[in-house]
Image (cartoon, rainbow, N blue to C red; front, side, top):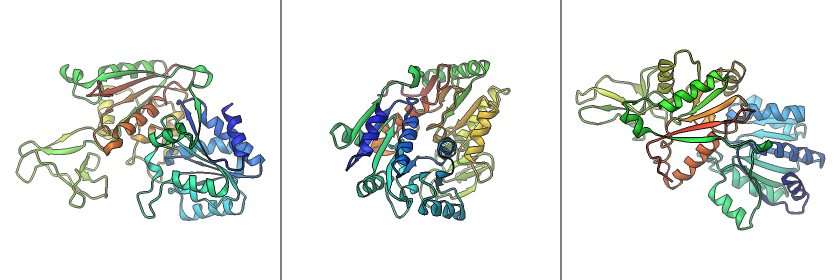
Length: 403
């Protein structure tokens, strides 16, 4: 019925904007595909935007199965020549369906009838380089100009989008249950203060370790989220308490043990890691990144194979697609990663999700920190239990009483 109402809306004089608010695994992608089908039947083109490049291969495979060579893909990881070829196909009208990240909103589609933004609340839809723009605002402007329906889809819409939908500026459609009536994953909160009292100062709590071993015994897979790459958050001097900072942007330098360097994740500055501080005191690593968590895991559970996906492991040769493909096909028990693993992935064998540090984004990111933390946790928990088996999530935090 959601599809039928939206299809009706596409056919009106001024389609406007609609919000599809559906829980994770409720079938939003199925609605998108049927809408694109009906859009093409009307002789119009369609766009589907996703927040992460990691999500394009999965969607591309799905859309290619339906629309074959009518699909074009546009994102920043393509070579200039590949991008130009795709752009030309769209311009010539050969490709009627465009899939891509935020820059795809400018694709030269002829007579677009539908512009979809999946996970519309994501900050990656905003460009931080010149020209600065928000793909959501550009899509809404373009939809009004070209009389196309703009569909914003999400399990956790942005507060302002939900406000506009509830006040009547946008149409609101809701999918409250998972497809086939499957239950949402059970969520356990682990208080890391209690773990510390028990003498466990590692990034993996005892309940999470047991859950991972159970999942492996059942031949199922686990996704672990830790939204910080590298080995440790910083190096701190044990005497003067100073931490090495970036000379260009005054941010703390993150320690990467693989090449024994300190790196700034903002501007890319890097320097060799010193053994001692300028005052003569020893430098001690504090905090955990994905690299260190992977090492801990391999020490604690040596027979459990672990794949890692973050900005350090993803490269031109080793793409998102290859890492996810290997994880799926070779049934690697554990995938650990930054927010790349939190959104949009549909892996039927994943029954357990672990969030190693739920507080990471809670005390940074300004007035939206609570909202972005809630979004990320809801999205990553939704990766579990999408197949036949029920899902479970374990969230580790130092502030379990936080709203």
